[in-house]
Length: 250
Ligand code: PEP
Image (cartoon, rainbow, N blue to C red):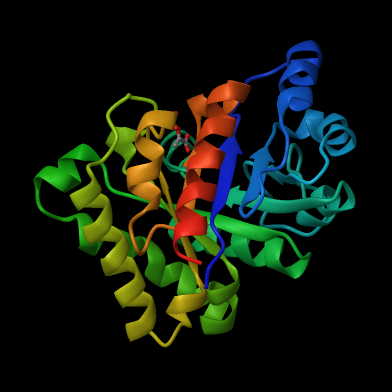
């Protein structure tokens, strides 16, 4: 059985003082895995403050070391005890022009250093309106499978994040999430990946009041949480919603 994972994505938010407050207010939630993906400069602070909550980053270099100004390697973040690295977030795809093969290489670099990549996929509103959701996520997954191979992809976490639901307050509906997560798991199985092992998170305007119904879906193994992860009470309530659902399926 897959254990639910709730991962916070702080994005480019925070500061030493506000982080201290937020980190101190966080506590592990029994029965589920919790992670927070912080900006690089705060890795040391978060690594010292967190107990029983995993540490993550929001991106990682595809390169190992050398003349890559501004890049941060998987080996470096692993030294801070980092367990997860988000790769291919839609903001990085859109604003920094990251492509599928590069995202696959970033995931590969993370895995090589024991850091679990959280590979984000998801359609834009135009793509949804054109009825292209499943082809889009399949197009995003295929190059990642090519780079990681079946074994590698089975070790990754996937996050289905419809672009139009991120930071908008408009979550995908339960039916939309169920359909897409089911299609993603079927695609994995059809491509020889151990689909039952792969955690597929949902992300996009998850809040305490919609988390439970989303996490209760068979193919939803938790959430990637943006805005709500910056508010300790809200984030913990989402984690508790995951724990309630997890306890019902045990
Ligand atoms: C995200 O940025 O990954 C995200 C899901 O954001 P939000 O929860 O704010 O929609």
